[in-house]
Length: 200
Image (cartoon, rainbow, N blue to C red; front, side, top):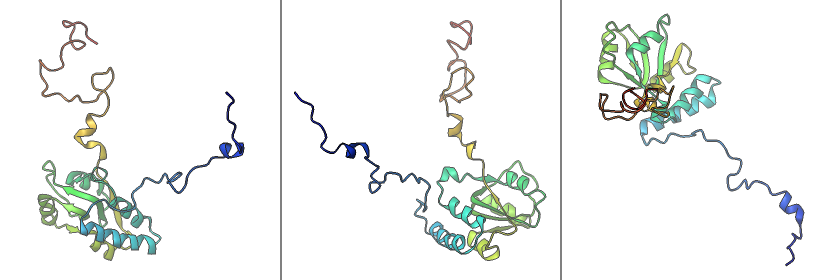
């Protein structure tokens, strides 16, 4: 049986990427928020305009962060906020996320803060200390280019889920195992005690 040869062998050698089917399109960053929140969509509209009409990196960054998922917009506590704003008096702190209260912080300094959300207690404590809670549309009016604004972010890897990433129980791994409770009866046998096989 003879092998069938290609009548045009150059076609097989030069097969390219089907660009129409989305070949080299590797852009995975969001270009719009997934949220259906109308207020977020209005902020996107506003900051899209500001990012286009001003040559400010601040507006571009705020716009990019408005698109982000909730895990990429971690909350920032009052104590961390106060720590980051030390020595930056007179400036506005901006966070594309939530400001939460921290009971460990006794004295709240007078801060001017702009955020997407404030928890009730955080808002009350900031206002009581003589500070101000702003929204991003108010910030756009007072600082359209982000001048005098400190853009902050919360700790992304402080989620409980992150502690479980990796293989638990493997030597030199610090991944937290999914155990019902921490006690004598739970994951304390072979490999954990010399009396039960071996101790690593």
